[in-house]
Length: 247
Image (tube, rainbow, N blue to C red; front, side):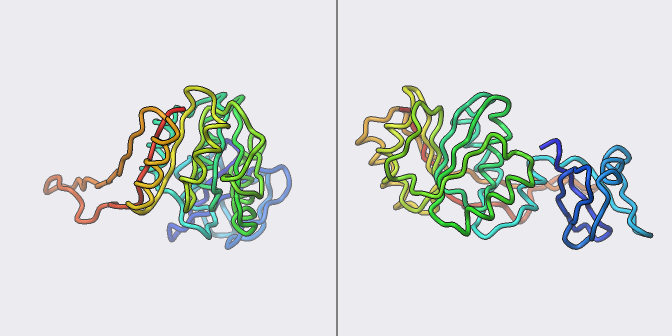
């Protein structure tokens, strides 16, 4: 993502752009010379007329928080669990089911580089198009293959290190995962409802996967101010459940 920058205007609104030698058009800001944007990354300030905007290289959190979305994206707390428990690191080969808006694809791609690869299956063309635009904006397209198709059907890929799905019926993908994963490869399913979790866990057990585990992760911010420290009155509670297993 080193070629993707975050621009923050005076009102705190955030924009993403790719560094380019030519002019770039940024929705809400207009057309900016690529050379001027590159210079702004070094100084941290982009001047457009009388306006002074802050600029920095975009982090993974920046990208995922700003990308175009049509489907609900996974939160950072769930993405972090997936990256950790599926042992996602450079050189890994990952199969993903359900592109959504591309948030998880972007996180996976940022981890498998250099030398890794992510193949994503998506049944909906409109979701696939949005995910494609977002992954391009994140400058991670080189290590990504997007296929319009059903992850629950037969697929060509074999010997994958991880098989991760965010689909309504993950239990139907367990057989595919068993064929596509190497021995010791990791399976993960994200589901919003308890009945879905139970169904996928039962299927994983039936298919003889090992170390089958399930989690729900909750997140609460700590507020630090002059008067003391306290938990936030609001917290990021239920977003979904994660089922993990090993082939």
